[in-house]
Length: 330
Length: 278
Image (cartoon, rainbow over all chains, first blue to last red):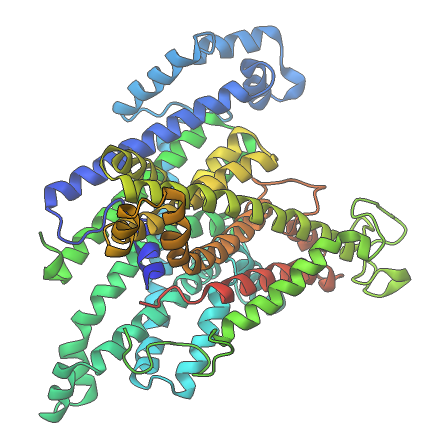
């Protein structure tokens, strides 16, 4: 039990239970500040640790290794202000951040804000599809398993959930590529050509989320069905479905939304991994590329966007928990 | 919660008081650890040695138990080499995280006040970003570095041990048993050993198994999306990304790291138990 509590508490700054709205907002603001600080410091630690002269490296990235000259490097140095001490550049970055200016990507010269705005749309689409698919898969299975706990269906789906949850997201993606896209030629394996290309990445992420969600819904249904209110509703003549809807939906929704809150971290990590596996042009893919290419401004921009989405999502889940469960309103 | 049917699992059968899932997990993990300790010596090949005349050989050819990869390296040796790397990192990262997490958690729960607040704020700070993201950012500072991955994973894992230890220590040190021991003049070490640790041990094992699964998954994930360790290191995720292009001509080659990774994570998660138990 304590393990479950520890895991539930793991990804929230403070438990939403009995906390004032002001305290909630303050906690999330502090979290957002920590995210910005971590991202800023990591970016500069990265710049400092890179071997050789950054100006030459960026010039090579822009113009190709054969075209780098001392003049080109000096131009880059002047343009990006690389000759200033690192703490000045850290402060400059934070200053720019306050005006939502994240600079240009070191490699292509595109404005980071534009690149991120473009990628964020793709990522939000993928995440929304995945959550939708997860609910679509988990709700009927969870309800059916929960109505007959200990039954055959419950046991089979229980074992399936354990097996699925133990499969890393990228591995699930690889297996789906090999099974569906390549063997059956049913869906595009990677890339972003048309609508169908969203299917495999969304399914991968959706299955990862659904594995645990099924059990959360199932446990909530078991608890509801054994409650007195539900038994009374059945005795007074309501059908199982009607009784479940009247007495179960809200009671079951509280742990489900709370669990979705725990899964925001899983969702964001999943977005990064699944986008990279399927070459989905979202923000996680961009982050992986920035890490690989050591593009510091792009890395800071994408990590910041992902980190702040995490804070925002957690906050929205806090609000949803308060709306559903009146006990959490302090 | 002891409502009927709340404990999910295969059934009410328990072996020596343990869930059957945990027994299966422990047995499987035991086999994996034994194979890992023996390492590539077991098959008699060097995981880095190439043989371009025997590329993508099927299992069983010329003494290659699991065949060879696209550079003619022995797959069995590479799987076992990868196991040493992966499980070694998992054991060290989880060990470090548990040692720091449990001792700092006990300290925070026992002392309270500013110690508790400062350590709690640090733990919250680590949780400000999803764990894998933090590890990726640290890996960006120094790519292809075992030490960066070790530091990043330990940093994200210690918080969970810290939270559990702090919460239990808070309850236990306010209880009668510890109060009595303090009045009897028994030392702090005695209280830790006789009152705090026995209560925590079971949960620490569960958290350690979860943490191990997290480390194994994270290492392979980062390797596969080429932001973790890099070729030619025999690491399961790296091996999968190397062998994915030749899956059609040599499906057995990519199946080996997939199965190794899936079995290891499954065994660790079976030891840990279900996340949703509440």
